[in-house]
Length: 228
Image (cartoon, rainbow, N blue to C red):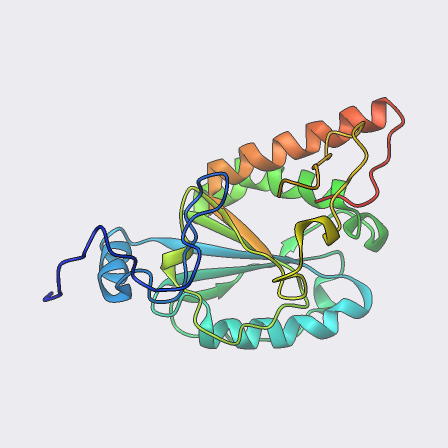
C-alpha cells in the first residue's frame, strides 16, 4: 500500500483533544489511516463480538440496532452478534451479511434478573472466560437503544476501550450519573471520570473485578445509586 508517512509531532486533527487527563489516547475519525488499519486486522483474521442485553419493551430497539450494525459496524470484518434475552423466540429475525453471524445464547434468567447490572456483569464475565474466548478476539458491549449512524471501525479496537453515551456527550463530569457516595466500590469523585469493549480476556478481567466489587458492597449492605 502507498501512503504518506505520518508526521509524529503534528496532530492529525486540529482543535480536538487527543488525550484524556489520565493519559489515555482519544481516537477520533481520521486519527488513523483506516486503510492501513484494516489491512493489519485482515491479516490477523480478527473477529469481533457485539454483545447487547434486551428484555421486555426494549426488544423493539434491537432490530434497528442490528440493522444499523450491518451498515456501519466493523464493515469488512468478521462479526458475531450476541443478543442476550431470556426468550429467544421473541427476538427479531435478521439474516446477517456474509461474514457475520447471529449467535443466540440460551440464558437461564428471568427478565427482571437480566435488567440488573449485577446479573449482566456476571454473565459477561462467565461467558468471556468459557465461551467468547473460543469464538472471537474482541468484544463490544452496547446499549440496546444505540443506533449506529456513522462508521465504527477497527480504529476503536484495543485491549480496553469505551465511549460516552451520546446523551451525555459534552456534559460536565459532575452532572454524569456516577456513584458520588464515598462508601461504595463504584465511587467516582466529581473531578474524575455508550459502549465499551476490548480483548476478550481483558473484558473478563474487567467484569470479574466489577462483579467482585458489587458483591463486596452487598456484603456491607451498600447499594449504589447507579452502577457504572
